[in-house]
Image 1 (cartoon, rainbow, N blue to C red):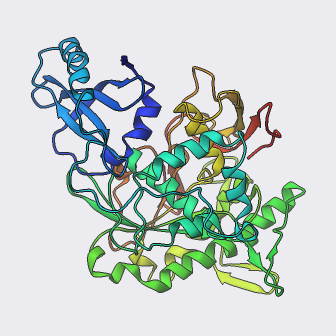
Image 2: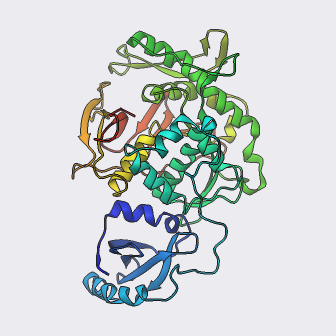
Image 3: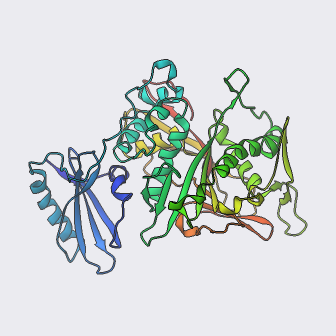
Length: 459
């Protein structure tokens, strides 16, 4: 048995369940370690109150979740704690209890990938994920997440393998992003999908939904329109996509989740993602802001501010025979919605990239990410294009990097911005949408898979 420092991305994935349950002492992690077979993991920490050091050793419980099985003493320096950790790990490794059962495990680890349905009922995206080397990193990271993910409704696996694939993938993405943002998660209730709490006791309720394909009279999905010019793209964003976003948002509104006793008084969030067509999430996002706030960006210079754009109010959205009022946040009962959360990155490509960073999957697979990111020039409307190899040592990524939070200006229970520190936040201020982003915020991207064993394709 050998003990060595480990990939921090991989450590974060393996200890995700421990991250998602309450912690009490304010600490900061200094280094992470593992045995060569990953039977044991360990972390050296500093107590931010007393400024002394300690270590925690973790092993899988009966369900396969990494949990604390041993704790060190108090050490004056980080190096003393690391030396003591290296000495202690062989003692813990030699314990007879192979699975390190803790006696409070309930249920079993989920098996996402053994088919539970006939082949003709399996979703094409599930089959893409489950087969071949191109998505082996995504498959590896999702397999690991299955140890820590609870399914309160009992339908998760069959949905994940069939027509509910995208909706369930969206829930898995939200799980990863919420844990990364520092939330402790409660999924004992079927609705809403998450009760998320912080270390200081603040809680929010989050319900997930997706924009799904339109179904024709024959019961089959209808191909979405594809913009062939900038003018067509503007029209789709102006009218078509707000109607698509409006359907699931108003559907969640009608369920009145905020009236449930276990979320009474909590900020209530609807988390939405667009899966209604291949690649539509790469261009549909700006339409959500227009619909929520009832404002569109006109690329004409403003006479008041001198900027190369101005906001214009939108009264309604019309597409063919459908028509809905704009400004979702002004509609009846929406004052009970604190915010709408969105990302265009809750996709297989995200899981694949995060899997590669955490050393999952076939090492011969290479991922190239291309897209656009925020221009630091405040008056610019043109994003910056980028191309980067995910294996590049300079490359880094988090689950919540592309997360966007749209705050309801009329909310009876406003959402604190600091609850989502990595997200981009949008507010209505002085009749305009003001956005607050971290540097290097990515607007949209595709990931190209290069593999000697798989056909190369963007996602």
